[in-house]
Structure formats: structure tokens, C-alpha cells
Length: 359
Image (cartoon, rainbow, N blue to C red; front, side):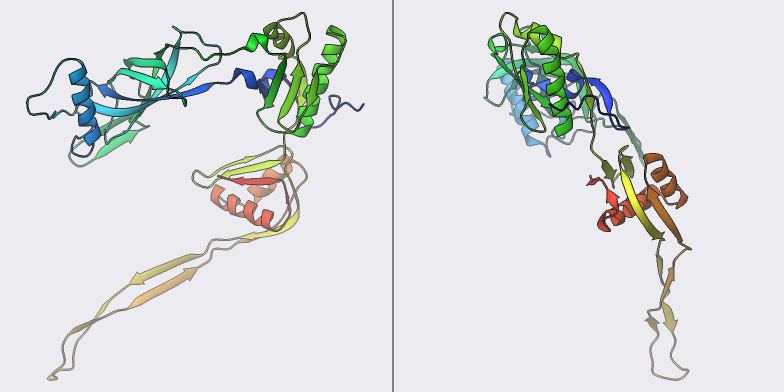
């Protein structure tokens, strides 16, 4: 049988199994809830634009035994929010987890607010945690009569350890005889290497093979007898494997971010890149009639169009390795948005030997 763990290459990294894969039986569960943040400094929802906030305030006060006489609440220190959290695997009732809080209405800032008791539900509609506590907001906003400054996102924040788990998710991890590993980044080579590494260890430890690769993302493991499931996986998760990564280029056109993988290669191509600048100027002119004539003064449109193309460079580009590729792109002297356009053109020409991901 051929083993891949002895392979060599610049893109291979020696990592632990738990750094590239996770147990399917140890998954998280998402929670969500609707609540109110109080104590804001006149930066909460405007009740005219967010009627659900007013309804929530009245419902909360009625639950506390308080009812307004006219049935309306006119406040600006309350904001309606959506609360989200991840319920980790094997967590027990009474444990605390972090929650994320995001504004639902038109509040300008949640800084200094306190989240009122909010039940958090899972996809099955059952309540698994209750959140409450003081908000931590990373951004801020300052506004004057003629100017406003905002840094970060003041309409979202976190409540560290803000939720108490009321119900644990039923799990039978200790009774499982078959475990399923899921790779974070699907890759057939890495999947096979993980199965080979586990089997090499299991032959010396238990005298038999226990793992088998299913596809590029999944590896199945059969637990031997005479050992607990937790102890068995604890012995496997620290095994070292050679992790492989695909050749990929990721570009984000909104921020101009470009990430090029180590195995990306470009066939030899000639590239010319230049920017076409078009200026359109409107210069209306006043036209006067002839003396002693019956004409009227009129305004005549006059447009000046100037097209300019700065000197572009024609360069040969070839990338047998990452360093040569980056040096070749830098020689063209273009900005990140230009490099993104060049990479897309190279991909269309069939010279980019990698997967191009545009976000």
C-alpha cells in the first residue's frame, strides 16, 4: 500500500490532526434570541421608526407589573437587539457562554447599555440559554451640529460570559463506536494521510486498522474495544500529518486584498496594463443676438471631452514560484485593483494554474 505521509513539497505542513479536522459528533449548536438593551445615552431606537421597540417595552413593563397610562412609551435609551451565541458541544447546565448583540432598529450606538434577560432558542424552538449583562462595544460615534465621526461598529457588541446554559444538548459520545472526522479544508491527499497516520498508530497500539478515508472531507474511525471514546480520540488528535493545500488565489475587490497561495504558478504571458482617463467638462456659452435685431439672448451648451491614457508597460510575466510571481507583479507598478484585473485576465487566458476566488 502506498503511503503519502512521506511526501515532500513546499506546500506541505506538518500539523496535528485536531488542527485540520474536527469530530462530527462534537459539533456546536447556534442560538438566537430577541431582546432589549437599556441604559443608552439617548442613542437608542426612535420609537416612530421602530414600533417593535415600543411594543417590547410595553410587554416588558407589563411582565414586571407596570403599565403606562396612555399606553405609549417615549424613551430614547432603549434599543431592540438580536442576540446570537454558539452552544459548544458537551456543555452542561449552569455553564456560561459569550453572546453577540446586534442592533435591530435605528439606534446609533449600544455603548454603555445593559442587555435585559433574553432567552436564547435553538432550531428546535427550545430555550437552551438565557443572556443578560453589560455590553462591550468596540466602536464609538461622536456627533456635533455639522459633523459626525464614527469609528468601528458602535451598533454591535459582546457580552462576555453573558449567557447561562439552562439545558444541555443530549449527546451519547461515550457510547459511539464509529467516529467521523471532517476536514476544515477538503483535500483528498490530506484525507488519505490522516487515515494512514491513524492506522499506523493503531497497528502498534491496538494491532489492527481502525480508519478509512471516505472522500476529500471525511475520515471514518472505528473505536476498538476496551477503551473509552474520549481517551481513544485524545490519543489520535495529536498525531502529526502532512497537510496539503490547493493552489488558490483569493481576491476581495471591495478592500483590494489579494492572497496568493504558495503553489500558485503562472505560465509565461505578456501583459500590458494602463488606465484610461476620460474628462468631461461642461462649459455653457451665452449667445448674444446681433445689434438692432429681434433675437433673444440664449445659452448654448458646450462640452469638452478629453481622453488621456498614461504610458502603460508591456512586461513578460512568469511565476514558477511564489516569490518570482510577486516580484513580477510588482515590476508592473500597478495598484492592488490593477493586480486584481491582471489576475482575472491571466485566468481568462488560461495561464493561471490555480483556482481564482473572487469575493
